[in-house]
Image 1 (cartoon, rainbow, N blue to C red):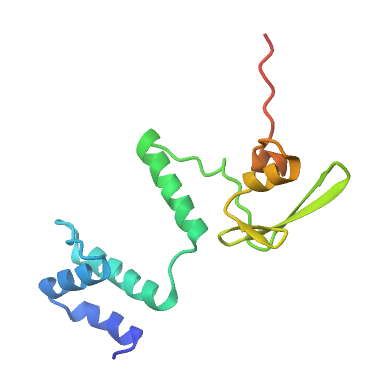
Image 2 (tube, rainbow, N blue to C red):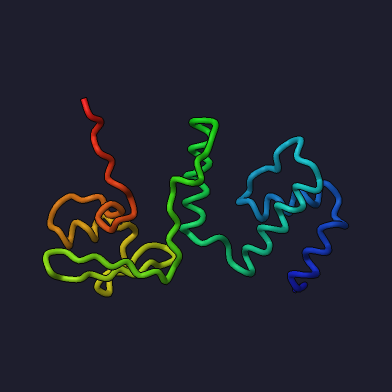
Length: 149
């Protein structure tokens, strides 16, 4: 089997029909969109080839991109400044009723007391016994005061 570098270099020599075949192979049988230029189609196939060999986006990054795409589709705009990004390895510390709690930020969620969680909210609920917003409990979101009347 050819190396990844050889496969990528070979994309430039493929006919349009061969490129469509490669597209279907790497895009779960989907047909290549009509009007998609040869250059962009080749780049998309190259991305998928590399993704299979080297791995794709981290789950958290993929979720964030989907969230931004949905926001753009619904409102026509995206606000990159509102979402605070936590880097894997960050440790969140919160004191609650005299006990200090530590949460480790992972690539695909959070670790608390040797267990994996997808979000902070169930961790906050476990600590407090009440329905708290996890990001707010850990100080990642500000509490907005009600407007004065």
